Amino acid sequence: MAMLRKAQIIKHDREGPGIYRMDFFSPEVSSRVIPGQFIHLKIREEGYHPLLRRPFSIYDVDNERGLFSILYRVVGLGTRIMAKRQPGELMEIMGPLGAPFTLPEEKGKIILVAGGMGFAPLHFLIKKLLKRNMEAEIILGARKAEELMGENDLVQLGVNFILATEDGSRGFQGQATDLLDKKLREGNYDYLYSCGPYPMLKKVASLALSRGIKGEVSLEEIMACGVGACLGCAYPAKGDKGDLTYKKVCQHGPTFSLEEVSFHNGPGD
Ligand SMILES: Cc1cc2nc3c(=O)[nH]c(=O)nc-3n(C[C@H](O)[C@H](O)[C@H](O)COP(=O)(O)OP(=O)(O)OC[C@H]3O[C@@H](n4cnc5c(N)ncnc54)[C@H](O)[C@@H]3O)c2cc1C
Ligand code: FES
Image 1 (cartoon, rainbow, N blue to C red):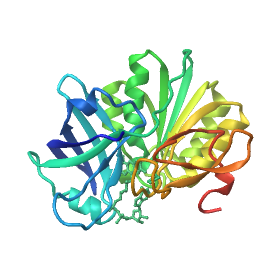
Image 2: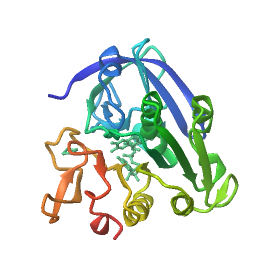
Image 3: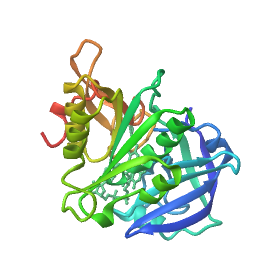
């Protein structure tokens, strides 16, 4: 049963051009949520527009203070309205929802690949991996330097990270997947996690699987109900017998194993 609750905005800061971090007070969410899960946020307290809630990954949690945070980019009506919300206001949230990332049972070398806002769920995950003394490094990719997310957070966490920009304005010049290809040739990795745009995830999965590396991706689909009832977020995936089926990103995901998602039959193909 999806939980509906009001959560108070404690802090709401601009983190970059069109990028905001919103911190909520909700001990019920912060004590339960696992990396990879998301909340479904009601944008307006009054009126019907926009009608549908909007999904956001959990970016960070502060259990002692009962806080959880999201990191979001303004892309349309809902996020434009959100950007005007003030600390002290209440927002209605549904969640935590969705299947979380699974953590490797054995210690090994982990590589994460974030494209743009795909950094949001990976930030919470990487904190959990570090708590378990896992060896993890992350590739942060973007089109240009201004769109790179998370550098300061990763410096604070003391995590190894490598930047890739398509225009070469910071770090490696090229796509995050070009850098991943190079890293996978150089090092022995045991597990991979990724979140970002669909074409990036498709290439990430192909590079990892061709080297026998297991891992998981977090998918983003436009959602309506958020709880598996409307089929609005169905995504091509492999069934138990390798046959093509559809899985609901909100309920079976948003995290899926690299083998499970049918990237050859996805949007854009
Ligand atoms: C599980 C999940 C976790 C997410 N986590 C984050 C996050 O941590 N930070 C963040 O900034 N965004 C995240 N998103 C995407 C976020 O939900 C959308 O950007 C948001 O709903 C857009 O609302 P809007 O009203 O501003 O845009 P709209 O006016 O609804 O749409 C504007 C544009 O954004 C596209 N869009 C809308 N919804 C999505 C979506 N779900 N995925 C991809 N494109 C979309 C539309 O096609 C359109 O081009 C997540 C999505 C999912 C499914
Ligand atoms: S959003 Fe309704 S089934 Fe996923």
